[in-house]
Image (cartoon, rainbow, N blue to C red; front, side, top):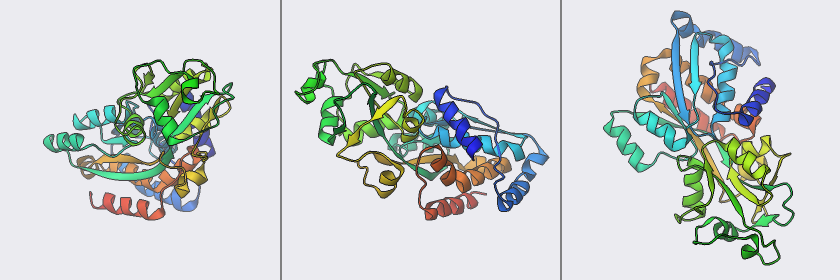
Length: 318
């Protein structure tokens, strides 16, 4: 797991990766299970494709890396097109699973139904969206949700820090936000800005690493993205408390870091599980290891009963 954690930290500094699937071997039970589930790989080569959320990507990339050793004939690709972009590919039948940092939208569900694609939702972890500023920012330590809304909501003006607090510098704020295909963007706009428009002069990107670099190099920069990306770059960024609460494993798990805590999902195409034994094996491995990997890369595992429920749902798809 340490190897996977280091690899994932490296991938969060780079761009989206195409990885071969991979195996964990950290105990007799998992080793024995890996031998049993590798049977499908011994029969024929298999390709599995996924895409979607950059927030969820570190978990899946880590799992894929750990899975390949015992499943050399199974190749799993994990793209990062953002939650919305991932659902588009899922709807078009291009992928077997879709990573998402928000639930599927009603219109996406309708399109999936129209395309004849049945799917199952798996809840694999919890995240705390982290608000970050430049390391040299010595004036912003803590924001209320109302201040966060005031900063990020479009009002037709070029905002200065002093507009939020007269004691802060009279310097223009620079904004770095996930792109419109991102589930993190959707969550932030809907749950924090209450559906109002995000500032129009924000730098938008589905690649969280672009946002990290933007804030890191801009003294007046402010941005937001998944907790794991903050942890991977905490030496270069400064995290902001919200309502006096800093995002940590403990505050995300307890629910005290609110309203910026949210669940993370993988949506599985039912037909792929039913018709491809390797797909079933990979998703089973994913569910069984999602909690440990989530914690390793900086997120919070869901309660054990959630993973148990997901395994039962997966079994029902065979």
